[in-house]
Length: 146
Image (cartoon, rainbow, N blue to C red; front, side):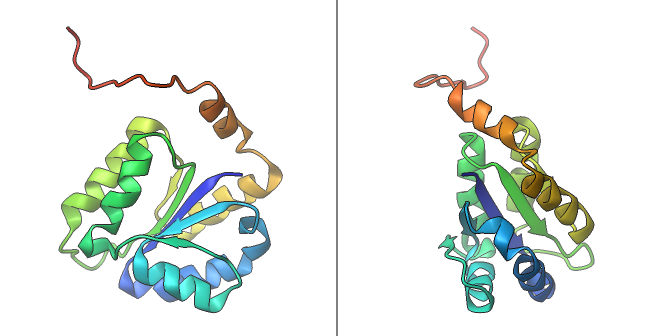
C-alpha cells in the first residue's frame, strides 16, 4: 500500500477529478492524500476516501511537503497551472524541491501522471516498499557535516 497525494490548481481541478475517476480502480488499495478542495472534489466524483489537508494557499502543500521530507510519501500528482501566478509559489517550489531531494515521483501534468499511474498499476513501484523497509529509524539528518 503506497501513499499517494493529489494536488491541483483551481483551473486543473476538473481535469484531476476526471483523471482520478478514470483510474479509480488503481487507487483503491492505496492511502490517498490531498489538499482540501481537490480532495473534496475527488471524493464527490468517486468512491475513494482521501485524507484531506488544508487548501494549498492555507498550507496544504506544506503539510504534504512534511510527509515528503520524512520520505513518507510515495507518489504525488500535482496538476499545476503554469499560466496562472500562484500566491503560494514559494510553498510549491519547496514541495517540488523536496520531491527531488527524496526521490519521490512527481507528475506536474496529465501526460506524466498517466505514465506514473500505469507504472503503479503494473507494480513498478515495489522499490518504494524497499525504501520504507530499510529506512533507518531515529536518524535525524540535518545536513550538517560536523
